[in-house]
Image (cartoon, rainbow, N blue to C red; front, side, top):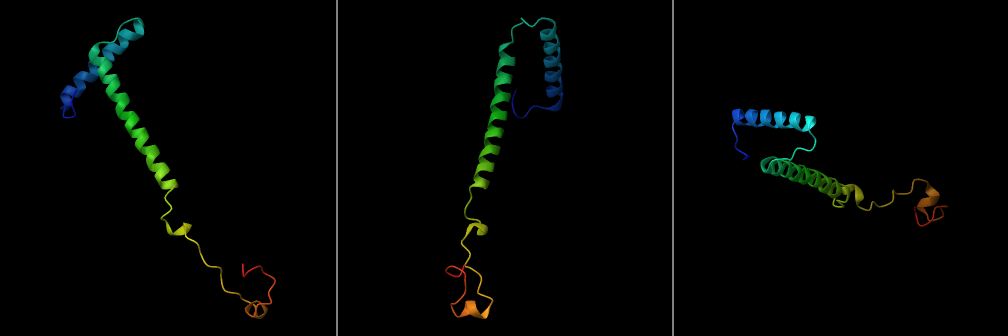
Amino acid sequence: MGTGMNPAAVQQELAALETYCALMEENPAIELTERTKKLRQACFKESYKRRRAAAVNVVDHLFSFDDHKYRHQPPPPPTSSTEQHGHGSSFFGY
């Protein structure tokens, strides 16, 4: 199966796989054909790539520290007159 299959070929392949699946339900000891094994492997590989890419994107998003919300913000200016003259009760202006 290539990436450029036409819709009729895809329908034909799906019908063959459904028939083979019904045979496997009747007789679980039936062997998979080499073509079916390769198709299974290709599908698993593609889904694994998609899952891995999605996981990497999540991790990248979680650990991206270039966002502005992670930068240090200076403390707000004092509001009362005693704090402006250095006699406030706060510790180092925080």
